[in-house]
Each structure stands twice: as structure tokens, then as C-alpha cells.
Image (cartoon, rainbow, N blue to C red; front, top):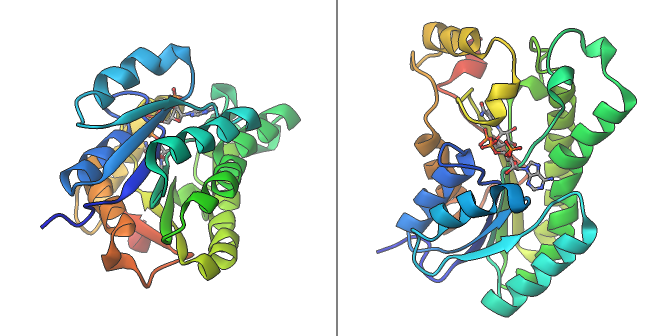
Length: 254
Ligand code: 0WD
């Protein structure tokens, strides 16, 4: 039987077929979830549409998370389409390329604010408007990285945004637990995606993982997808406010 039959889940952050959000969507669809996909702008709409249309019954909606009105409209549309929402997958982050190299000490005020807005505050903005649709309880998850806890070369302003995101997961979990809504994060090992293109020297990061991680290999998006599926399912019902590592065990040794 399918673990997510009858569950309505919105997936935010598909940019292309390498996106972590896309692998998550595959794992959720394989277990019978009904999915809604959001796309940031016209720039990515066609690409997201082409992918999403391969999944039966998928709903495709615009939502730039920096615009409150677009999140309000998303909530309205999801209410129309689904009635009840059971899951929210947040797989969104952004920082200016120039802030992802050199010294963290050189971070600009505007660059700091933008990274925080898109990569951390957006989870709050979306959870705030979508949790009222989770009338049967729910599961909210986001994507984070080890750079939240450690000063990692070049990750810089994004590391600080991920630290805020992880703290936000704990505060949201504390708030929403009373509604039987769980909030968690997956901390993934480095994966070559569009977002990873912005990180300088990504190859040497991957090589380090292959050499040092207990499993001696890098992380596959499908591994993240299956953990996300677990977090969306009844099987994870006792887990909230948590960061789960899907990183070949790198964080215990690296
Ligand atoms: O190694 C990696 N790739 C890791 C990624 C390791 C650990 C965590 N992560 C995180 C990222 O920080 C992010 O939170 O996983 C999440 C997904 O990232 P991804 O799958 O690696 O990257 P990508 O395919 O680029 O998806 C991120 C997407 C954006 O893509 P682009 O590249 O077009 O910026 O986030 C979306 C957009 O689709 N996004 C937005 N969506 C709505 N409104 C916005 C926005 N304003 N800005 C970016």
C-alpha cells in the first residue's frame, strides 16, 4: 500500500530536473501523494510545467516567496484545489554569487538581508499562511546544510541564513505542535545542482566527502527524496523540530 495515499503536499523549489525538490517530488508521488508545485517566476515556469506535467494530477502555481501577496494567493489556490493540506516542502535558497566567495567579513548589508529573506524568512512567511489549511495535522520540511553549524569555506552568508533557518524550524515546531503540525529540516550533503553552481570550489567539497564520509560517497538527490517522504509520512509522527542528516555520515567525521 502507498504511504502517502490521500495526502496533499505542496513542493516549493523545483528549478530543473536536478533540483532536490524534484527528487523529493518523485519520492512523494511514488507513495501516492497528490502534489502542487510552485515556481518562482516566468523565467522558470515552462521548465517546471514540463516536469510537473509528468506527474498525474499535479497542480502548478506561481509563488515568488519574497512577495507576501503571492503567498496569500498560493494559500487561496491551495484551499480551492485541495481543501485540506497535509504537507509543505520548502526547498528554496538564494544568495548573490559575490557573497559566496572570499571573506564572510566582506558581506554587504543588502546581500545579508536578501539571503536571510529568501533562504530563512520565506519558511516563516509560507508556514504562517499555509498552516491553517492543515486541519488534519501536517508535516513541514525545509532543506539545510552543515554550513549552518560550521564556518565552511565560501558558504559564508548562506551559512548564517541556514543557521537562522534551523533555529526557525525549532520555533515553528514549538508553535505548531499544538495543531499536530511537525516542522523539520533535512541537512543534505553537497549535491551538484543549480544552487551549488554558485558555490566556489564545489568539486573539492565533493571530493572531501568521498574521501572522509563514513559511506565514502556523495549524497544522491533520491536519498534526500526518500527521507523527505518519511518526514511527510505517518512513520515520522513522533519527530519535530529536528535536523536530519542525509550526508553519508560526513558531519560525524568531517
Ligand atoms: O548541495 C546542495 N545542492 C545542497 C542544497 C546541500 C544542502 C542543502 N541544499 C538546499 C539549498 O540551500 C536549498 O535550500 O536545498 C535547497 C534546494 O536547492 P537545490 O535543489 O540544490 O537548488 P536549485 O535546484 O537551484 O533550487 C533552489 C531554488 C531556485 O532555483 P534558482 O537556482 O533558480 O535560484 O529555489 C528557488 C528557485 O527555484 N527560489 C525561489 N523560489 C521562490 N521564490 C526564490 C524565490 N524568490 N529564489 C529561489
